[in-house]
Amino acid sequence: MKTLKVGLMLAALTALLIWIGNLVGGTTGVVLALAFSVVMNIGTFWFSDKIVLSMVRAEPVTREDVPHLYNMVERLARRADIPMPALYIVPDPSPNAFATGRSPQRAAVAVNEGLLNMLNQSEVEGVVAHELAHIKNRDTLTMAIVATIAGAVSSLAYILHWIPFFGSDDDGINPIAAIAMAIFAPLAAMMIQMGVSRAREYEADALGAQIAGTPSGLANALIKLEQGAAIVPSNMPATAAHMCIVNPLSGVSGSLMSLFSTHPPLQERVRRLQALGPNVFLTVA
Image (cartoon, rainbow, N blue to C red; front, top):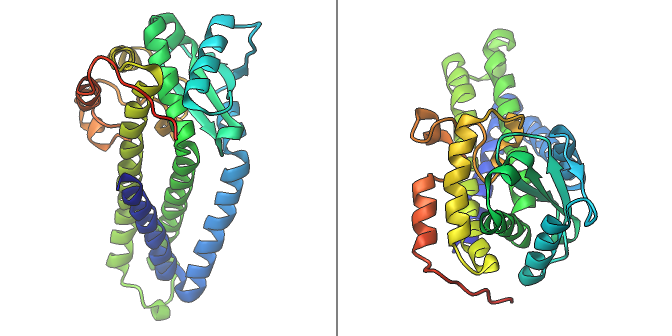
């Protein structure tokens, strides 16, 4: 049911893109909007992981570099029944982590230095298990596609914003409506992206707890990470913030900006994890 919900949100985002394309250029606009989206998604499919890892200056590490962390990721990946992902360390003092890659066979887990300095072993295990859950569920590809389409909608909305000033009287677009849509469309795209991201975070929390064998490590880690992210500035670019386990740009929990966060409320995430009980067991399909 939750997968269907995400599919419906993706369909709504695509429909919004087509609608804006039609407003910008009629049938030609629809074709161009779809072509633009296809090209962007092809680029996302093949290169999104390399782009984001480069953006955050992530460094690949091996078993010899960080034996304890590497062995932990390898063990949890085995429990999740997925290949061992590439492992990266991000030189960022803000505590966070993310996963990327188009498939479990082409995946990577990146952990900030700040996270490794702040969390104990069971908490790091909880975070890693959460990121492996994203990989197992193929959320890394889903969220990259959602972000790409949302970006295309915002780009077309920006073009729509200028039509009243440069279009002719025959364009058939009410200037007030065009400006309203230029404001509404990016907001709608952001809300849909937020809905998809929050749904995937809840799923990854639950599956991550199963991979780790207990929800306590992840629940404790989330509390520490949100507090740490609010205090320690992050080098994470805003375009990649939705990939992180906690929002690195959210500031203090409970602020107005948290209402528009791509991440679910911390209290609800912790409540759901605690409701799972002290021990949970993973059933590998």
